[in-house]
Length: 135
Image 1 (cartoon, rainbow, N blue to C red):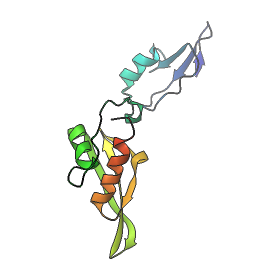
Image 2: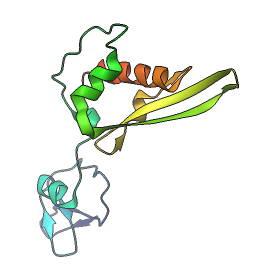
Image 3: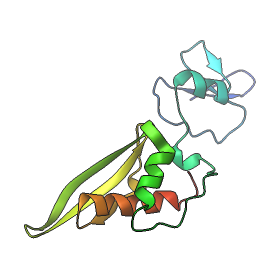
């Protein structure tokens, strides 16, 4: 961090990490000579808002045996949604799987869920995501 002759605080960083901008006036310095307002710096540095920052507008239907949260979420998100699912334990005849969504490249482990199959784990993770208020 640096201050100028008027006492303005500057943050000097070359990372793409989120900035903790708690003091005003605060500027983000891409280099020693290029200081920008935080919103402009965020756009230039390439910081994207998190899925968890979204205010959701989608209303999902009550799940049924043929149309659960998983297909509804996949339909809503389209190609932006991928899934991580793997076996994490259990006996051979009673495996346990873990799944969480990856939305637009962001790993959303906050919606991580377990199930007796990959599909069951993904359905539970989809329920958590659909009812989060961020979709």
